[in-house]
Length: 311
Image 1 (cartoon, rainbow, N blue to C red):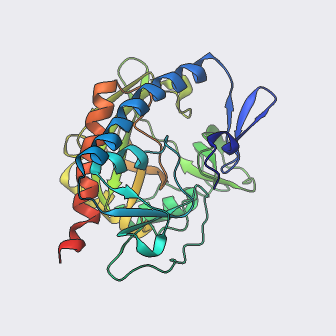
Image 2: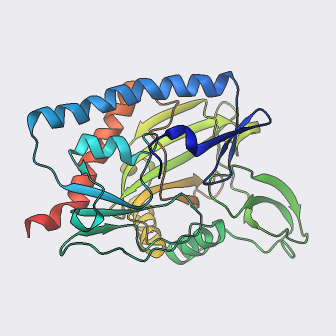
Image 3: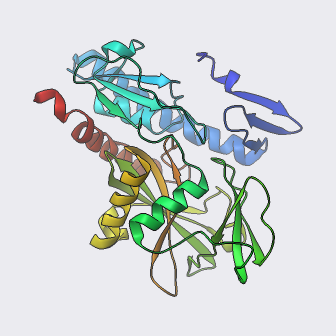
């Protein structure tokens, strides 16, 4: 992969096309503000990298396959905060991380050294259907619906990663190709907002949670009015954490982010999306909390992926 970040994008008709995922982002003031906000965090995150270099910190080596993450992916600042050293030689790395933005991937592990820790090589499908099936096995109740017989409002989404194209429709109806259909989860809270309980997974375990809030009218867009840093134990019960842990195991997700919605009437949680190359922390999160979340993730990263080195 090219070291020039701009090669990841292409400008078309007033939008930036993300070549890997096909996602299009409007080129507007909101995007410019997000970029500026991210650059502030990136500059501080880079200081961790410099400090580790200057202090000669002993650290595990990490390599990515088949792609290398750009700095806007959460693993980038976490890697530097944890003291991991990025190298290109996969066969020499202590940790080998499967990194590919695609919805479906081929995860045949490359040649690695004895004892290397492999991350996410068991996760080769993050389509919405796969996520719904994994959730049903983990939770014992269903998110997915059959649109040909389901009566009432439901959500239609693309199977692909990072599209944010959900819409509410009425069933029954004939399904469209490339789409999946889910029950509509009422995750509205006070103030006319909906709340997503984003959960970051490290080593198959919930590590950090973000309460992501946006207006009800923009529920399917990745444009948050407010983001609060929290801990999994404050967002989910012990039984629900067990469901999240089981879901990650079903999906083969060692590292990533999942979107969890809590239904207001039943109180049940539903895992509606999973991403093994999640970006973060969320732009709308305050800078001190971005740094705090990254340090928490770095601690979880070291605990989950470097323990084997001492055996």
